[in-house]
Image 1 (cartoon, rainbow, N blue to C red):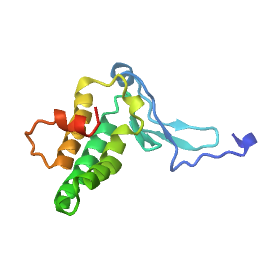
Image 2 (cartoon, helix red, strand yellow; image 1 turned 120 degrees about the horizontal axis):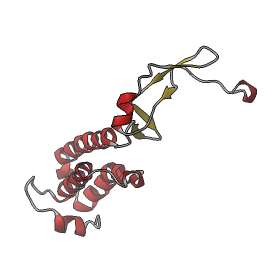
Image 3 (cartoon, one colour; image 1 turned 90 degrees about the horizontal axis):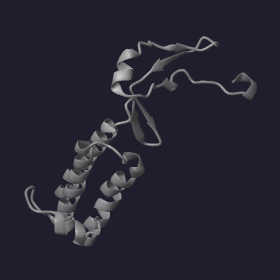
Image 4 (cartoon, rainbow, N blue to C red; image 1 turned 180 degrees about the horizontal axis):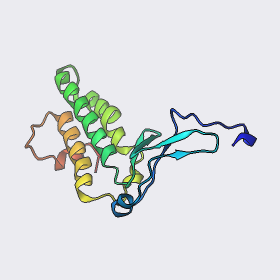
Length: 149
């Protein structure tokens, strides 16, 4: 790396081993020391371009972070709902919540059913937020009206 004038920042450099849980349980590595004496720590999660990657590539932590942030934003929007008309609410929800669902959504290909249901739950709640529906109201027609299906 020195020949290309590159250096590692030991405080920011992370190393993650990716694989199925059975394989990861058999690996017992505590850290890596480079020839320059820099020690790199192993992590179970790494964030890159706003996406949280985990060592089994399930994206569970990423989806839970999206869920937490989305529901926090929806609670704030519901408190201020009376200030906006339906068109403005749709714009707000699209720009603050739906964009989080759309960002890097191709990485979610092949995730398990329960995590896919979490993403669908966020989308359903966002639709209910726009139209002021209650928790147990049906949301199918609402998503079609918003063109989110």
